[in-house]
Image 1 (cartoon, helix red, strand yellow):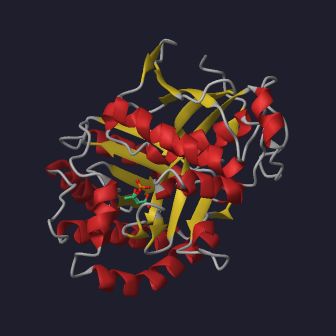
Image 2 (cartoon, protein in one colour):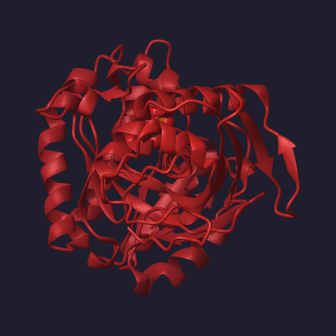
Length: 363
Ligand code: PMV
């Protein structure tokens, strides 16, 4: 994790556990800013044993991104019990967040207060580095940013484990992985107990320089949330078979990451992504996240591979395609994807180091 505290942020390494007493935290009234990354799952969290607590049916493995981040400032307001949630514009403007968004953020802040035994309210401003109209999932980066910045604003410096659990308490399971950099695994459950479910680092970002060229084909918000997808997953007749196949697939991905073996990683992550969508399409009622352009990108990747360029797709609960490739092939991949009908833009990203404290304050 890469951290550099700004002068006005509480200092201390994020990995050291030092929750401060409530009175000190409440009196601090301090402000913290963070840039927390999105992540792309190689093995997907799809289906939950307990959706409210985001306890997954299966382990997942992801790569933390570098460029797609949520930039968030949190100020603790000891003398109020209300939260104010703002969206920050690129021009520095601040506007009240839409009601649903504000309610979800405030519920997450409530979990953070409860966990640290803190009172008061928070003023929050947040913005994403990637356009919200790009249809990219932003809950992982958004809630990871909230967990990191709010605990810092309370004067607490938590371990990655506790931050991961707090990020997960938002209800967005993938946020549990975004508090860490590099390659990350989130197990099905911890031996210590269900509520302790947290993610851990498999390898740091500098272990393996992989790139993610995102072919944006969808600019509208998706019709079915990932929350509904998780809820319906077990209604698919193929869900039980997926659980049987996953242990071997997880092991292949762990080994491919450890050995930096792209020829082993590529096919398994594409197979896994198709599997998620197979479960979605066969859920009752069925969910179709793909668009014709999704299939056009997949066809272009098959052509590229026949020409000797290694590039493999993975798709979350949406139509956009994350194309994972090596640095030497990134340019060729981007050029070809730009020409696929239906691709409105490309986002060039890669593996990143995790949340960075010391970002500029947004207010
Ligand atoms: O974190 P949630 O509840 O939004 O679910 C994430 C679901 C996927 O993005 C499709 C898969 C994953 O593991 O990130």
